[in-house]
Amino acid sequence: MKLIVGLGNPGRIYARNRHNIGFMCVSHFAKTQGIRFDKKQGQARTGTGEVAGNKLIVARPQTHMNLSGESV
Image 1 (spheres, rainbow, N blue to C red):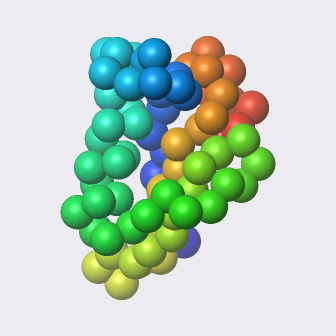
Image 2: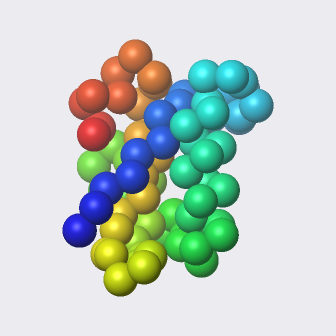
């Protein structure tokens, strides 16, 4: 199993902020692969799927960027 984490800051105020490029990339990847962020695990929104025979978890930590280590 693989883990793909997109870092960013939670909340609408940061939605289009340059610090959220990790959220944007992992969200785009998940969408193209049909993966939904439908779970909350610890301090992250997560989704699971399979790509090219590899099971994976995609995650968006719900802590601020400088605290992302807590949720990852």
